[in-house]
Every structure is written in C-alpha cells, then in structure tokens.
Length: 159
Image 1 (cartoon, rainbow, N blue to C red):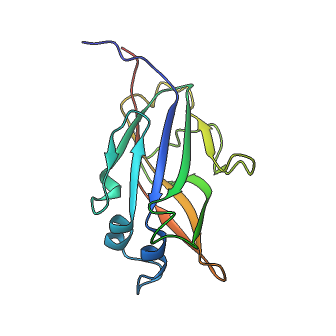
Image 2 (cartoon, rainbow, N blue to C red):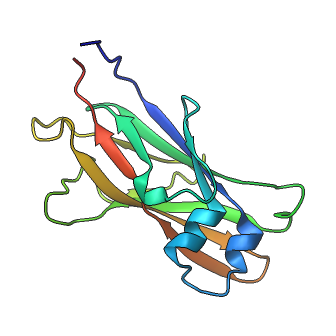
C-alpha cells in the first residue's frame, strides 16, 4: 500500500456570480448551485460547473490545514460588477458526521479573504467523510445574497 504524504490543502470556489445571483429561485435549488459553482483543489482536481457539489470530496489530513478561497468565473466579462466573498465554513451536525475541525464555525480572515481550519487529531476520523457547508455572498452593487455550498471532506490516514 503506498504511503500518502500528508499536507495542507487549498480549495477554490469558483462562482458564476451574475447567473447565480439572477436565478429565479432564492435560495437556489441544488441544481442551480451546481450549475453556477465549481470547486478546484490545489492538486488540479476539480468539480466542473453542472456536476453535483455534494459528491465532490477533498482528501485532507489530521493536524493539517485546509483553506478555502473564492473567485469569480469571469471577472472581466459576464461577472463584472459583482463581488463575492466567503463568510464561513461550518460543520453539518448529523449522526455519524463528526466535526473534523478544532473550531466551528471557521470564519473568514478579513485580511486574506480566506477561511482556514486545522483538521483535528482523532483516532475516530481516518477514512471518514465530513459533510460541511461553505457559506458565501454575492453582491450586485446594491443587494447582497447569501449562498450555501455543501461538498465533502475525507480524512485519510498517512499509511
């Protein structure tokens, strides 16, 4: 069995801000969220627009950091005039879904715009999934709307 090199992880949320903001439903349906958001990991793996975010899973490691950033899909084109910002990342407390982080919720660093947290060290966590929510806003110049995105994390053991 190959050894996995534990490391910090970075995840970027990419948003089609104009399209998401102007969806007829608010809050948007899961399909509307999937069509207007994409996730990209530091290693280049991603979840393209239109694919279910709830199935997107990032491998993380105990005692290592995970950071989220957010960016517009087309800042000089369609999304010009819209601003987006991360708000927080929080655990979805359901049976069999342990909180992976040392704190909850994880809040945005106003200086960097990132949300970061450290995976707890626990013998219960290896090879478990965590359902969590990334909360962000889209602002059109006059009004701000808040959105929730719900992908997964999986803690991997290092051997």
